[in-house]
Amino acid sequence: MFSWPSVALIQDPLLVLAFYLDPFLFPVHQRVAAMQWDGTTLPTLRGRAVEFLAGDDASYSLRLSRDLAAFLTYAEQLPVAFAGRDLHPAQWWVLMAEPFPTLRVVALRIFALPPSAAGRERAFKRAKLVHTAVRNRLDPAKADMQTRIIF
Amino acid sequence: MKLATDMYKHGLAFNLFNNPTWRDVLLDISGGRFAGSGNLHEVGGRLLIGAAGTSDGQVSERMAGARTCGVSIDGMKSVTHKGVYNTIVYLPLALYLASFRLGTDRSRAQNLLVELTQGLQARLAARYGGATLSAWADPGHTRENQLALCLIWGLVTDNPTPMRLMRRLSVDANVCLFSYGCAAHAGNLVAKYLVLIEPLKSALRDSVAVGVFFTRSTRAGAFLARSAQQLRKAGAKIGSLELYSRTRWVGEADTITSVLANLLAIRRTLADNRHEPPAARIRILPRVETISDSPTTELSLAKCVPFLQALASSVAVLEADAAPLSSVVGMFSALRLCLDQSFAELPVAARSSIQCSLGRRLR
Image (tube, rainbow over all chains, first blue to last red; front, top):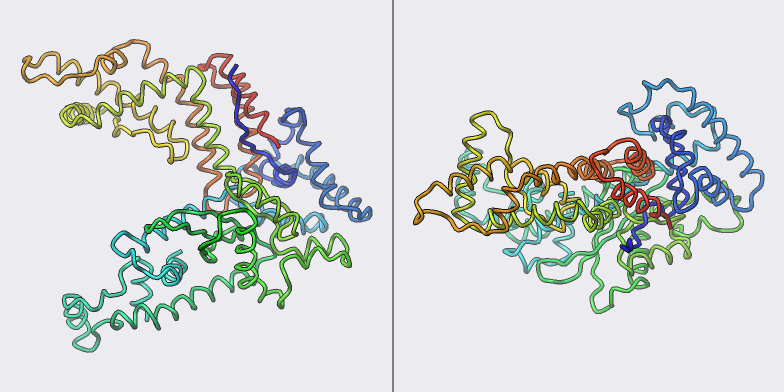
């Protein structure tokens, strides 16, 4: 039997919360609700994310959960044509999220995070432009300065 | 200064203006008033420090307007075979913060975390009035305030053991709120292991055999290029053969797709070769001939292409600049949904296996 190596895609419930906070992905929300991820569903993970964010603060937990429920209801009513618009979800939360003040703080911070570390691979590409085989005696501090200028 | 900055941006050497040809060109353009930004020492010293300061100022300005940021760190071997670690800040726009070397220290998680924290502290604390990175976790604050004060919400790295351990340590030390692995790397690793199951396994094996033969054999490659050119003139869409590279993300999709697109030209090359006089024929490997001439090859390659391309597109979305964090679950959920309803060309066993593998990617 072939055994799969441990390559995790969803390593933190906050990644699932980010998925539910994206108003442009709302047509997918319902369709994946029952999907099992290692025996757990996405709504369960979403609940865990809220628990983690709220910590021991019951009042904050209540406000956060209330905002999340209101947002999910609101997102369900968005027209289908709205999905996939060329707008970053963070911009949507800046412009449209007045009715969800507690969740807005969380959403704006979550959407500042990248899904991948590809920017870093691009930084390497730039660094290799500076520190080449011909310029291999370049002082590391100067190479770093020039990379900062290029990036 | 402006010319020197442009020069730095293109990775040019600091002694550019020592070159008499350049000096003459600049003197001609400026009517004898300007011969370059200065000598090696000026360009590599005073001007470089000034330009780097301006660049750092622009980064700081952007960061001053950000509520929070994500941080990623990764290591590479420099041209002198020394380990260099780069730190990138995401707002979500990626900004290069600094690089560091561990020197005589080993690349252990603890050492990496110390260097990372010191580097971030130096650059980020100015914005927070000298507060430490973990000050947000002060129990005196309410949870809501803690979250609002937390500067680094997420730390994202790839998945070697020291990096995974460093992610855990950084959360324990309250350097960041949470940490996670790079989703594009995870998607890439999914592709790497997908090609261990049939029919993707044999499709990649055959594609690599054909691709390596036609790129290593100069004459065979030239014959193939000629056939492809003739077919292009006749309207066929044929690109070049892409060799498999483990470092290219989801490179399996590119390799198999390119061999599939070139199959007609390959078959034509082999047929032309058979009609050459024996002395002028190229010696084609029997395996390559069998793969290329087999009527099932096209079908088996075509079966694998749609899903691999979907995976490649997903990874491309994930690695795009300013991609939102929601894409991680969104993309992989969408892939699983599509596996339920589409990709009928893949055998049921393969689809179930891929479903199971994606479904278990939770930790």
